[in-house]
Length: 84
Image 1 (cartoon, rainbow, N blue to C red):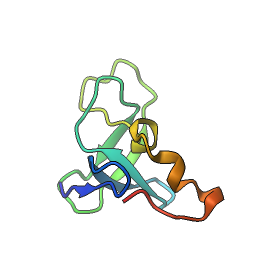
Image 2 (image 1 turned 45 degrees about the vertical axis):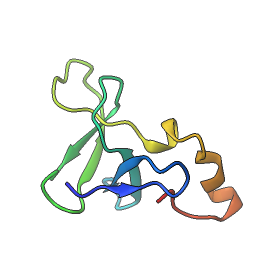
Image 3 (image 1 turned 90 degrees about the vertical axis):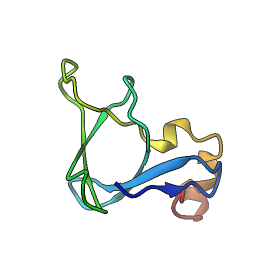
Image 4 (image 1 turned 30 degrees about the vertical axis):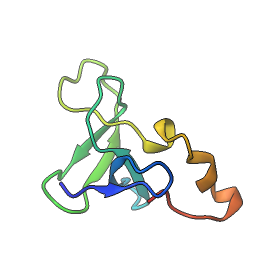
């Protein structure tokens, strides 16, 4: 899986697409607190699905907007666009 560096904090992240095709930044490392599952992880453009089953034991990922200390700099309200 290809990683990118966040322009705000420099952390490694993965760009994925939601089921509706929107781009979503996820922390590159799985986390037990994550709420997203990646499908098609071996491609350069994985798809994300929000967790619904707390018993899921595979890798979970967290939205980078939740962990990035500079996330507010990339708010769509400010018009600055993507995190990476």
